Image 1 (cartoon, rainbow, N blue to C red):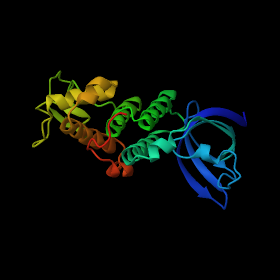
Image 2: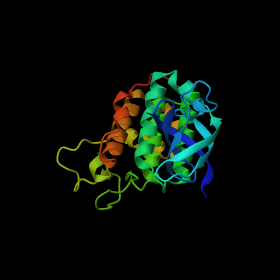
Image 3: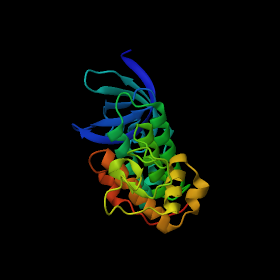
Image 4: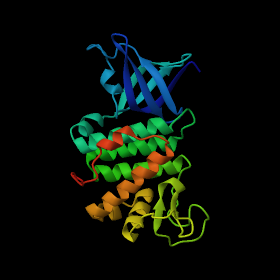
Length: 247
């Protein structure tokens, strides 16, 4: 069909001409979509504010040859204002949408869309520490994309655990026989926190100490960036320190 509707979360925008924008969106049913939103930079635009990063909208699009065209947009979740008002929420949200943009394509699943929307909603409401929301999102979206870290058996030889060495380049925990020389050991509490992050056990996550959260964040960041093959630029601006808790 030339015209279709879908629920989308706005990942990023680029200026086009004097009044238009190219909008990159992660949709619920059509994967990643790039479309032209005509006239949205004019003050008279009826839906320009609905097509800003971190916003969730119901859109009607016309299918074009290279870029689709946004015909209508209705707001479903206005998360941008509350996220932008807090630096740690804003930087975490940027890392999330950058990761979603890198991982998504036309075959992206509805679960990837719902995971991102849930993460942005939690950030906007201040439900948990922003860095923990980001770390949980990164582990879970990597798992949905086929890159789940091994947190029990050895990632190389499948030898049953327990193991105490985590090597991002090798896929997670590795046994003593496969661990490269000099590999640092991971504390049991940090390993338990990684497992909690991937399953969304927020009672355990919120109870973790700042040191445990920082250690887990370093491993999560290294793992995600290694498997994405190049760095997540926004991640360098995200603090590991618990500066803002749930509110």
